[in-house]
Structure formats: C-alpha cells, structure tokens
Image 1 (cartoon, protein in one colour):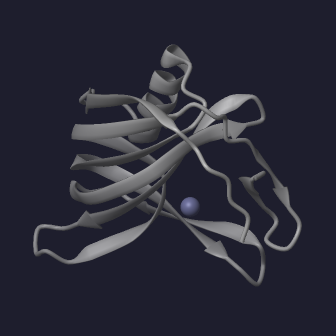
Image 2: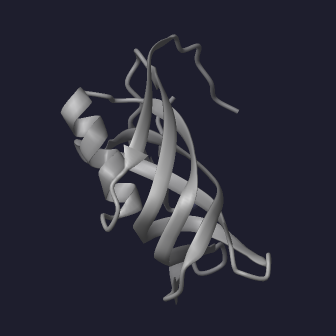
Length: 140
Ligand code: ZN
C-alpha cells in the first residue's frame, strides 16, 4: 500500500443540472474551481446509465448501457488529474422501480436530479499507468 497525508481545504455542495451528464458536470466543476484532488459523494436520479466493468483477466472494460430511469441510491468518487485534465472516477449503486440494484463504474448518465458533496485536498492527485492492472492509478 502506498499512501500520503493530505489536508482538506474546501468543501462544496452542488445540485447537478437536469439533462446534463452526471460525471462530466463534476469534471467541469473541478476545472472551473481549479480542484486537482477531491472525494465526493452524491445521490439523486438518472434517466439512463452507462456502467463499465473491468475484466481483470483481459484487462479491458466491458460496457453495459441501461436506457431506463434509475435512482442513484449511492454515488462515491474522487477527482484527480488524468493526462492534464480533471477525471472524476465515479462509482454508483443504481436502483430500479422494484428496488433491485445494479452497480459499478459509472462512465456516463443523464442526470434527472442530483445532489453532491465535495471535499477537496490541497495536494494534487495524479493518475499514471499501473503495470500490474493496466489501469491509470494514483501516483503516490
Ligand atoms: Zn472504477
């Protein structure tokens, strides 16, 4: 395990815009506010969702698109730098009308309504290629 101490300096609450992409809004916010590192939590509802699943054997993402209204029962993620741009690594637990859930790495989703809490860190977090996983992970 690699780690380092960080200090939080800024907090935000946000209401995500109806009709806009869930994750892009968070990245746009980070770029606008100059946020280079943060954790966030959120909840709300989306009109559709694209979930990625990382196949560890193939070291490749598989995509599943859900073209249906879903509750965002829980969303957790972080902001860091990927190739010089803010990247919102976003995971979500989404629920259907009957209460059943699906979950995973949220690539995209059309926001119906969303509420977000963001806690920033003063120290930038930068993603670099990680050999064993073939993922872009934090360079700590
Ligand atoms: Zn992920």
